[in-house]
Image (cartoon, rainbow, N blue to C red; front, side):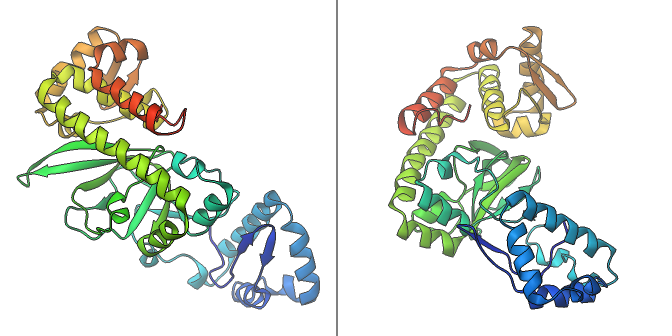
Length: 332
């Protein structure tokens, strides 16, 4: 949605501050200034305050202004692609009315949660969006809502092995809380959706002021380390079919759906095997009528059966989530 770049919206505890002169100036640039000039500045101020008393009315007003901008002749007010850090990320206004779906954030006390969100922006992450390469500086942390991020360990510069998945139960950017700003792994979006993003400086500031955030992230760090250790053991000792069943369940938990898209090539990277191994394992699961798999489109038909076909690692991961994080905080 087009936005007024010269207007500043601030919403906190129902107090709203609007720079009316900038709005009037921006409106005049797109030939809708006459709408505003017919009413005094004081009148506009009072009318807008009344309308902003309801979040729904605020959204409706923003929509009307956005449509007006689309019809304007001046394109300078429209978002410039060069101002977006990643072409596959679309920013969404960071306001408290947006539902909090990340469980780490939701577990925080109200004041800590609101202060954290005030420093976040909500972004749309697309499938395949690379967040960081090994050796790169970590500039942002991400709290996934309905997307998920894969951590890949590159091997010999040609192949890679997926070592962890981060969904709505966690956060990407853990090295920053340990005082390290360099990524040891390849981080890529494996499931598209929304996430809360915060820059590294603000994140450090939040860590210093919020003991609750420190505690939640310490617990999550333990869970993530357990997942990494479990994956290492799983890769070494379990057969491909069991490991495939485990990863499909993990993806299902973070995609919040029994249907999702994942290619043979990506599954081969996830499991660290050749594509023929993925074909054989997926074919076996299909014969057991646990899943259907066509051109990368996966549908799980029997969750309990797939859990029985997976190795013990999946259940171990779930038990760790339930035991260390608060009840119900597992990614399922």
